[in-house]
Length: 392
Image (tube, rainbow, N blue to C red; front, side):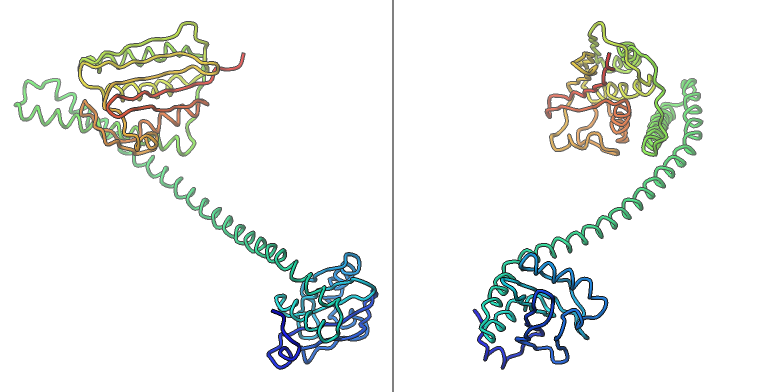
């Protein structure tokens, strides 16, 4: 609703000016002023503080050339005013306001006071462009907020990286210091069990339990050392031309001894004429052994584990399949995360430290490969490694 002149003049009027200029910037007529200590006259540019001369010149030229323009805040006496200019003919209509939201209202009052439809056209133009400027201002504010958030995020990432490096260093130091006494303890227990006939049944049981616990703790320490080294970037691959079938065969030869104790059969099938790959044999052997050991541990007595090597268009593919309890669907995304323990227990009673699959994935990725798992709960799981075949 447009405000009448009488209501405007008797009410609380916002700070603002409305006046006309010729195209050279000479003030022709002050139509309205609600800033008591500020006047305009003569040349518009002479009324401004020196710091506002250049931005005012840019604003005025834009209004003359384009028909409409809006200025940045200009210093007029003790006030900073936003100017809106409109030139439909040889006269430029200008309103200058402390608050841009009042500009259209002051232009309307000027139109009613002067009967000049040019001020009414200026009011319409201001309303039309206000939404655009509001969007620009919102975008500018959001951009500033984004920059601030990015700086804070970068700071947080830097701090987290520092803490993670410290954690890896601390884990590595602790694990390294634990490895030697654990090795010694395990060796002592193994030595004592070589003469187990000299111990009572209860003492033999205690020694066997002690050996099992020591072996578990030593495996945990070794896994922590491996994981810490991988996370800190200290792992380097020592690549050499290798036959993948031979690498996997060595793993199966080792694991068959463990599998036969529980009457588990490991079936091995390898596609002939596979190309030679450049791999780190030790680390790839460790990765495959983790998968096969996992399959044996989760398989029931008398079951079978299948290990296959094939190739597709771009990769040599190693698949390890078991027929154990499988992995619940909601746990599949966490299988390769460090310190993950599944809700399904191993059939062998072997405890897991939750790092084997995380280490395996990182070693496979270091070779440029991928690893994935497919499982239906109650029907076993299949882990698949894909290693890229070099271009011919």
